Image 1 (spheres, protein in one colour):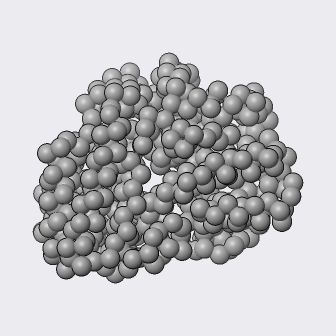
Image 2 (tube, helix red, strand yellow):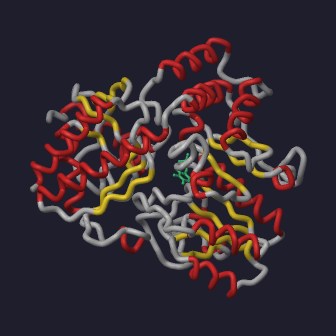
Image 3 (spheres, protein in one colour):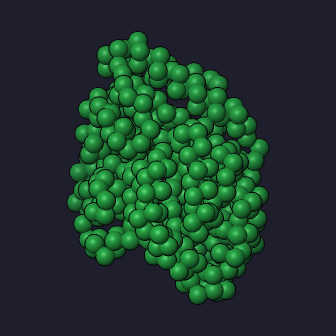
Length: 427
Ligand SMILES: *Cc1c(COP(=O)(O)O)cnc(C)c1O
């Protein structure tokens, strides 16, 4: 595989961009080599600047569930852009998108659009504190909720120790009210509630973790979490930035049969444009300005082009067959397991609908500690073998793969053949 142009561009990028990138997951630090520079996308395919073709299993880390430049989304974006880029005023698009989000998430009476998942969660933290009059929040080791100070603790593959900031520049004071529980371990939550009675404002969780690799909650974990938060007057904040519209039209909450108090969205909701959102029942959302005293604002929030893209994406998703999508996820999981076995490689594949993640370990992966048993050196080899075979997967063991829902049966066969080829070359 020829990567000369990418390598040259990366050298140039490093002189003007930090580490040559604008988000650290895009650097190839954990797999070695240079990041690929992408020229264009077309459906499920992307092409790098050296002309190599790949089937894209990253989907821009989540938003591109319809693949690249889906015709409906593209047309909506063009039509919106023809009128203007932004007004800083109300438009019908934001009302329509809010209405459609409420169809998918009936637990929301009201929605506030922001520009990223990070912003949605930051706003949700503020809201839990205002609503409950308490300060402490609980998050789970290995879960990522964006890069806000208070939640940059044990946030995925970085650090995992109680109350130690996961980044330089985060003062101790910013995380002193952040408590860490273990994913899939209700007792760890109960213990924190017992230790800090009447001090906890909210529990924040990814209903299916995707930022320590994919980790699906065990039977009744989410239900148990719903019960103990409710019983203790704690708001349950479900961060569906990754899981929203992924397993069904709606969220993981619908799938698990629970309703959080506040829901955060991002990624798919913008269809590739920068959109985040948070929403809840009226009693909670009416605390947000201009109705209430919780201040939160944004120059480009509800941007008309972004709203148009999100709206077209969600309308398209309403027509999609999510059962077929799940079968596709399962087919990839089966293929990974079979080909790994043939190559004599230990593997555990976690899958939730269109989210898939192989871990190179013989242990069941149920939380951050078990995720970390994966052989990351082997993953690096696998990553490059996959690229060589024409499959673009995240350059990190701890990032989920996102399958495009528009993948056809023929394209699925191509993916399977390429996976087989990759395993053959690393055995
Ligand atoms: C990606 C992600 C975020 C952050 O969203 P950004 O748009 O990158 O700020 C928050 N929570 C979860 C679960 C995510 O996957």
